[in-house]
Image (cartoon, one colour):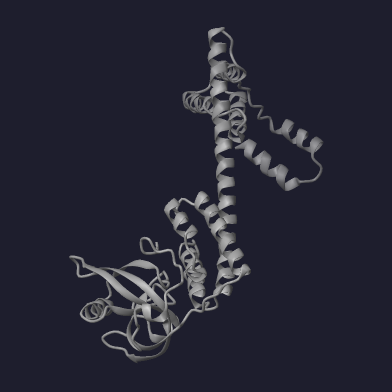
Length: 355
């Protein structure tokens, strides 16, 4: 989460002389998976040896560093061309060293910077940078854009669990269009490349428009997600209500000595199984399937399959037997009467009967 310093409204009234000066050459801290913006505060976990050394050296000097996002977050040791060209000059506000040697660092962005060239590679990157001055924009169109953004962001706060009411209040108090775009952009649930694209957009009006498009898309996704969630909850509530009513109806019928249709069907199958005179193994299988059937809702497709299997099992002639007629001459006569030709097949059948 990126946030403004407490009490900061981003009025955009600071003059050049009031801002912290960024040296021409500064150490560059590669950042994974997120983007820092001017005026905003960001907590960072620093664990790479080069980065730890950079922070240690900066803490002994002016605490000014360049924070630049790397293009691929999984890259352990990014090369110069694997860092984005625009980053943020930042001030280290606080550093806490952990037991394992890593650092928890809190930095505050000062202004956008453009890397002109890397002047040193070891023990960490140092680069010559150009500080990008942001122009002050005013006018009815900008005010309208800001108002729309604030209203839309408040809608996102109402929908998204990851956006707090405090953040919504903070956004509503911002006066600077540039800071407004940066703060909203930093809190959107968008890929790192999209966040970097916001940082790369120097023109404030263009940046406001980009953030508005991204925020509008996120609100649409949130609305759709909430709609789906509400529908699922409604369907679940309906199913639970129907189940409760069915159980009530079953209990009432039981009190009245009546059997519901499903119970009556199970009882009928139980009687048929008892009359089928199955062998022990078949009887166990039938009872097991009947027990399973009694627990399946009748409307289920699985119920039909289980019921069909039980019907087939019951209808088998378990206790019915006939005497085999092995008269070869009679069998030959029947085969010749019922089937024309097929001599090889007939011969094979007769051989089987003879054996």
